[in-house]
Length: 559
Image (tube, rainbow, N blue to C red):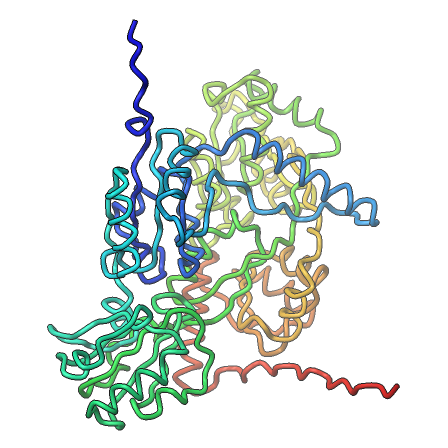
């Protein structure tokens, strides 16, 4: 048995300096994403975007105590809402993650790193910085201090703001240019004589200094200057000015800026692909939960939009769960020839019940599965099953499914019964259609849909005052529920509906429908919205800007 004292230092993980890039999480390097997802403790600069922060600990299991605490907190929120008279459960807060964030302590960075490594218990600690770590003097000083203290470290480079943002602003830099971070000081003599264009990382407070110092050293006040804010994100804006007026720019300029100046540039509209996307900067309301809206929001983001999810429906268990129990047992007993799924929620409800009863996909042997649409079919596949029947892509609804559904033939089909697990408010078209084909239908309530709790007052105000540029409806119920919990969208808001029935529901409520795709699918809906807005922009017919409400002036009362 050894009496040697264990080397605590050797049991510690590494400090990994990770470059977050210019702000857009899609611009993280593959290695940066791997490191961020696999570790939970991060010391993060304030300017690192929330999108990049969301990547941290994505692959790390959430501690059970955090999950339990989140459930307890939601139970408390529900109890308070019920006590206040609410008839529906409030929306759930964001799910907890394993990520732990700390702000950097500049005074004693080594002490902070060492404490974080001990807390990480053998895992690595992330030092997450904007841009590229080795492009910043302050971060290089941190690396030197960590190395001098004998702590193991690695550096994962990231794209720098100056090297990336001009491309997103449509500014063709060419093969040679000079970049510098003004926020950490500058050698103005060198910059004034350096190879142009100059690409400077700065803040709004630095702009007058840049103008004064470079003009004093002989650079022309008429030189073109471009100031980009929120570079590479969907909030990016590029302001065109000159070196002489740079310090007088009348615009909101928060956070890190990229200032590009020097020789004459080509017409940037030729290369400004980022800001020229059809829905760039548009706020689009998606009346679905964040999870349900993931694919839809991703497609909107691809067109440059800023999607915001607002749940309009809350899914609740059926009032009579025994009906579902009998249906699931009927699957095992071979009572059904077909199971017809009409929604992702129905798939989830059936599989939850299967799990509760200790069953799995093997118990579906001999049963045929049908799905009303591609999304529902994907949900079935995710459970390890194969949907055998889908309607035509151009008609993914109850009527479309009936059109392709086989007739019941007594001499061929030993079983003539269909299980239809679905919502309590579903229509009769599918049941009627299947019965006309000769099938017996067990129409079972798998889940209830109730109207969700109203969104926050700020969101309701945005809906009614035109704060959203567009809203995309995927069903008639989402139209009715959104209007019920938040009011009608403003007249300037573009209304997009996935199909004729959704359009009819919107028009019944007095809404003007602007967009209906040829195919009733989410991708087609978003594509049609983008095409519509592009056509309006080309014709100069975009909706008028939202009128900002004036604040009432308050007069001081005399004593």
